[in-house]
Figure 1 (tube, rainbow, N blue to C red):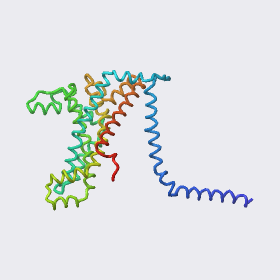
Figure 2 (cartoon, rainbow, N blue to C red):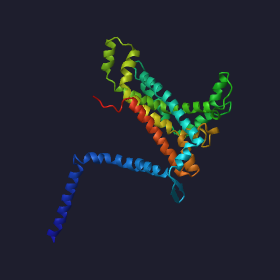
Figure 3 (tube, helix red, strand yellow):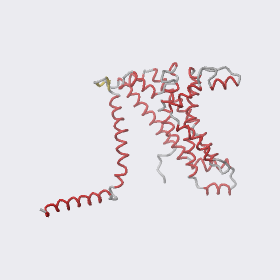
Figure 4 (cartoon, rainbow, N blue to C red):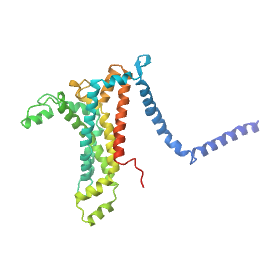
Length: 313
């Protein structure tokens, strides 16, 4: 009997040894490490994307679906409200690119300077807004840009001798309010990206430029900017996506209600309105597919223009 028991025990030990060898194999290890990313990508990105693509050709009702071909896309092409939402999102994206790339870059350059004191304090102060809930931030900015004369922005207008403004009921002033919120929230994050990029520039390049008699301005133009190109491209890419995908800021600024004449409506806001509020999931999926296509086209174009797809010699 004892001989029969030892055989299974030996087999179990051999299986454990073989499993350990397989687990610690240099050939298998890389696949084990990337497995969580691959699973996350497949489950939370690729599958929902494929599902949305299929839904965009369907009419989805509670408990039933039916194939409608390109009906949703045809409807989208003539949808006036969708065009307003698309223009609002593009306008917001352009505004954030103009403000949230050059200004954080200059701030990073100033903070990274040897002459700058209390660097860590300034980094912390600029980074704090991103730690604030966007729900709280949106509520605060809604009060700041309120219609009452006692609202923060109207108090400033009155102090300057100007008339109070109904900020969130006018297209231009509402756009200004959204950009204020975007700058307050994302300025510090982009600044830290640029600080990381600046720290990666070899000091020898600046020393060589100083020996050649280059001024601080020329160092910035001919040394800093070229070396920051990868960081600028990265920040530009995520800013394009962030600008087009903006929703919560607008949603909270108007307290979850429709903005007057849709001045604050974005593509994602329109997707939410159609899919959640009106329960037209097929039509909302078509909006999402169009948003993805626009984002990819813009980003691929800017990556191609920046030379990121070129092979190095």
